[in-house]
Structure formats: structure tokens, C-alpha cells
Length: 264
Image (cartoon, rainbow, N blue to C red; front, side, top):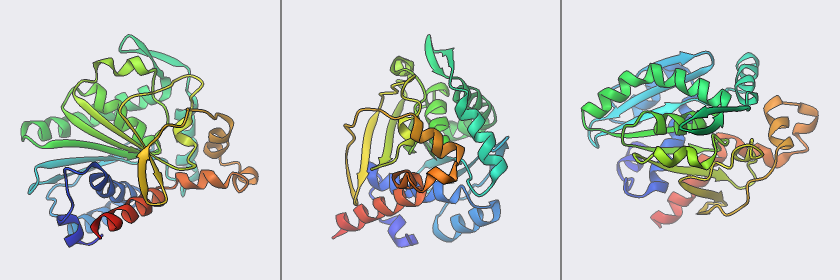
């Protein structure tokens, strides 16, 4: 996407906003310098910040022209083995933790609370300035975005890509200020994890398939394949070719394909 494409996006169309967020999520895996350069080259965003809790990172960019604040939380960086295993530990802490009078994923709640504590000042600033708050993330970053959206109590929109299950559905009973759009690439099994514990039915469930976006009606299932992916057991990895669709680039390419179809 170039600057003209970005300026011509329909910001009332959630799929086009998701396309922008997919680029921002891809950017979250780059260095601070690369992030800043990419933003300044393509966006009229005047604010940039990065922070970190263990392996989790986020940056926030304020779009002055459209009064929007994008909070982008990085997922697991598979290029760094140490980070990959630390994030795996977070994901495997799946035993229930009581929150909002129900049960949620222990590891995601703990990581989410830490991220919320370091993001709160930026969230408050965006809210005070009257910006629309958009929380977005891929994989682990997406599930943390969902958690922060519900627990921060600011009006916000959450757009996640390939995010795993966070909690039992009644966790969201108090999330009245948050709109959630969950994108799953056709064949991506990570959003089914850990479905044996948390059904996580809340918000718009959207399936990306060959450049189309449809309602995701597939039952949540699967447990072993996501674990194999997270553990990076390479001897099995190639056998589970469908799991490759969890890569952020597939989300971006399919949303871009849809955008180009819609422009014709």
C-alpha cells in the first residue's frame, strides 16, 4: 500500500481498516528504526513509541488527520528462538484464572495485565484527546489486544488476526465499550487454541478465504496441531502445511486482494 491507497481507505469499512491494521501488525515484527521509517514514509502519524514486557512489545501511532490512535501489539517473533519459547510458556499457562467473575487463560491474563499497566498512560492520552482507540495484534498480540480492550474500560475497537482463545464467553459480559473483530485465515488453527477450555465466542468472527471475507461459522476444535505449531516441532511442522497460514503475511495478502477487488 502506498500513501494514496492509505488516504483513500474507507474508514467506515472494517475490512479496509483491518487491511491497514494488518500492515501495522506486520511492522510490529520490525525494529524500532524500521517501524519509524515505514510510518513516516507512508502515514501522517506524528507519534511513535515502543515498550516491552519480556518478549511482548507494542507501539502506538496517533493519526492526527483522522483522530485515530492505533495500539499495535506484537505477537511471537519466530526469528528469535528465546522469544518464541518465552511466549510458548505464556500460552501453556492455560489453567483457568478467575477474572470478571468467570474464568480466563492464566498466561494471557498475566501478560495482559502487565501490558495494560505500561500502556495505560498512552490509552489515557488518546482518550483525553478524543481519538478513536484501535487495538490490534497478531497471534499472541491479538489475544492481548482483546484482553486490554475489555479491561481498560475505554471505548475501543479491537481487530485481531489469528488470535487464540482468551476466556469463557461470559468474560465479555462487561465489555460493553469494546467492539471486537476477529479475523481467522482459512486453515489457521491457532485461533482454536485452547478450545477445550475457553470457547471465546464474542464479537465478529470473520474468515479470510481466497481474498474474500465471510462469517466464520466453523466450530472451534483442535488442540494438538496448535501445540505442535507453538512448540515448533519442525519434523511435524511441514506435515501441517495448513498451519503456515497463521503467518501474518497471509492475512495481509488476502485483505489486500479483497481491497483491490472492491476498488474495481
